[in-house]
Length: 79
Image (tube, rainbow, N blue to C red; front, side, top):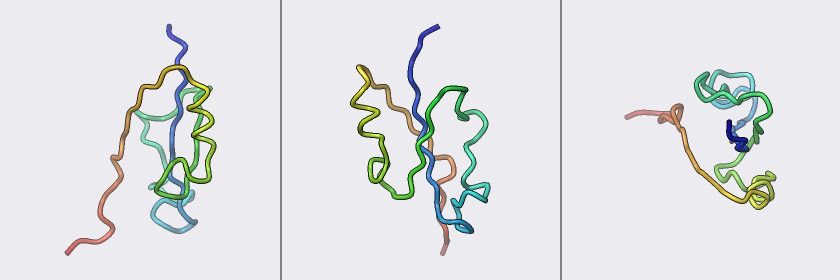
């Protein structure tokens, strides 16, 4: 098996908010859940590089494969 580092980015909102750590909006869907040893970076801003160590983690890698899953990004209000 390949030893490929995986980094998960998880948005962490304020407690009680839509993505607060105490809500289902914070949960990572089971199919995308981190495996043992995979890193999880919690971000609180739209930019995953702001106020996190993501840039230094990526700089340490020799190769990068990027994937994105925004399954829970839905409008907060509808007309």
